[in-house]
Length: 133
Image (cartoon, rainbow, N blue to C red; front, side, top):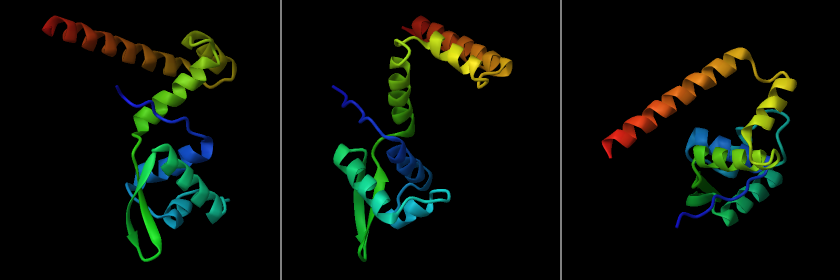
């Protein structure tokens, strides 16, 4: 059985974003990957250790006094978990969430057309997989 990915807070996701971009990094390098104003070093350090305890990243080696970390959770897995959490606020249904995006001006007709293309492509791939079985 696959392990459920951990729930991630905003700062934890930001730490992982830096690691996904860099592959591996020390706490200092992770902090440098943040935009100004950066959180305090100790805040990033605590967040990194919290992510390590959750199994979202691990120490790979030590250089001097600095531990080097790498992500264990893939970006797409974290995004799916976050999306499931967001959808839960809308009763698990995408339509109310899409309506909220429209009302907030965050969803354009171009976005809708792009989504329609993606849905058609996915449906075609599913049909092809079904035929091969």
